[in-house]
Amino acid sequence: MPGQVGEAVSAAWEKIETWYAEQDASGFLLPPATPEEIAAAEKELGVTLPEPVRVSLLRHNGTLSDCWPGGTLLSCAEMVRETGIWRELLDSGDFDDVADFEADENSDVRALRRGWWNTGWISLDADGSGNGAVLDLDPGVDGSCGQILDMDHEVGPSGPTAADFVAYLEGQLEDLEDCVVVDGTYLETA
Image (tube, one colour):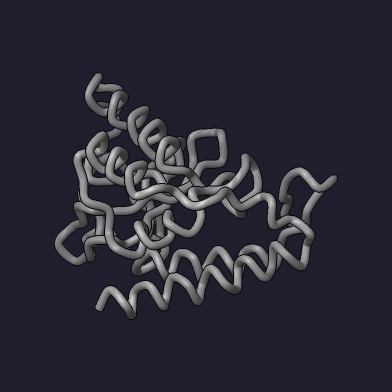
């Protein structure tokens, strides 16, 4: 099975890399993470990342800031930092008043655990304003481990937006089709 997972992640990345190359923006994609960086992130987060995420990190350890459709694809260290911020807010009780958020019409409420944040969520990308995609390693009763959610700091979590990490990458490729490179330094929606 890992071979199939690796092939699916590689196929998605090949298309993404082609898009960046066509925009003369291959430098927006960071070099691979080392196995040690991935292991350190997993230890800090207290999780084992799903194989597709590990394979992806071994290909690109994120992007430069504002060079991904959702803002920035997070590196191992940034995943730890961003997830840590959310966990600190959860632990401090900042979400106690909003624990029973009202899910939007695009959410499958039974796929998500109740609450504004969950310790089983890992930040994947971030827009710099408290929003981004998260990997759900602790889904609700009708969810699946590894599904992708959207976290909006003003309205809470929604989704799932993708069934798994490969579907997330494929969705990002679709979003890239609506982006342009500005001044050779960042992406913007056209």
